[in-house]
Image 1 (tube, rainbow, N blue to C red):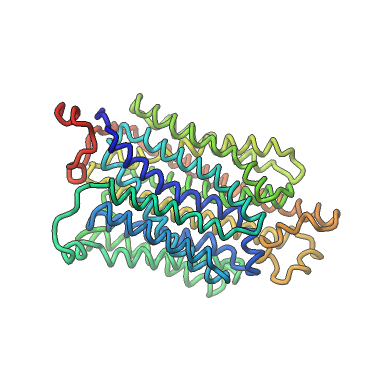
Image 2: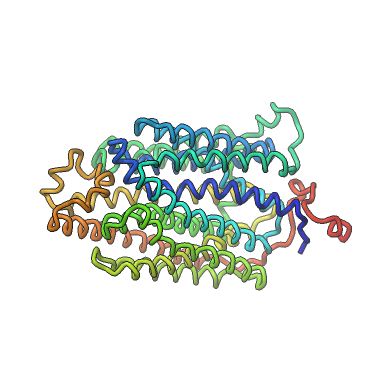
Length: 516
């Protein structure tokens, strides 16, 4: 394996900083969401999460195309700038509409950051050793997942939730300067017009519009309008048709396809993509809704709900350990199956949680959950990339991150829909009557549960536990589907080469260059 010099590690650190920026935002806002919704007195809390996930997903394929056409560094800098702009708008938001607009812009940058860090890593590190570094990315996510809920809960408890967004600005500045100075990868030749014409604009339009339509339908379903209403069905139908047209266009028409058709026809790669989708859906839904259990059922403050969720930090050692194991053994299937087994067991145990369960039990379940997610976070990339040539690293990874983000849209939306609809059935009628906008504003009422009369408080907490139980069962079924699709993949040998088009300027030591 090539020996990396100090410049490589500085570049890797700058990528971790970018990734930390995106991950911290995700975990901190989820914990503070009840307080934010209460402060802005709005019912569209679902869009605080969905708007970010939606725009992140929509921009992911385009960010991969920008990196291919214009180079890695310009694409990363654009992503960081968008994230910083959105953060500033969110921090200064006076209405839910303004907050959602800021979150949309944030998502554009966050999506680019997620995709491009993975693409740049593939430019510098071979697939066989990539798991170790992907595990370190997992450690970065884990640190953000640990810090985010505590910071978010602490600021929310003090009425200072706006600083969740303002704190992103200095981190974004450090990340941007680091990328500008250090990231000196090859730049594609040609004029600006040549690079612009290499972008698959039709494919981008189809996937963005389809994603937007799908998310609108999923977000409105059962909350703004019934699932069988025209308002919900039309966006869902348009989204489905749009995705079908997108796949057909990419396979038959596109000169520079956003998603090369070979990525979708290899059985092992397809299995990896489906597993990635299922794993990400479960993960994002858990990040958003496990704090609801602690706050809605156990009466925990936002700070303590973040502390109780620290068990998910087990993701870090699991991600790093699984990456090292694959590097040493060259095998990935057994680890993937072990990850699915742990995730399924954890979700199964969570369906037994009640409002009166000892807090230590639920914390133990989060540890097992974190281990399962950590293993899958690192290992699901192997069945995707192992069967493909290194020249397809960028589109393969862009599609992987697109599915991760699109799964996040589904995870947040499905979780919100299940919770809202179940609470409408489970909450006491007397309590529902006192809620001006019904269950659509129930998130804003979580901080008020502790002040309810004892009898109603017990009923409300039980209603939250029962509603979340339904959500855990839905996620359990999705995890089971992910495991079933994992049985299709083959154990392909991992390559030990780099794409020379993007690694001409080696970030290795001079001794290694002479050795080659």
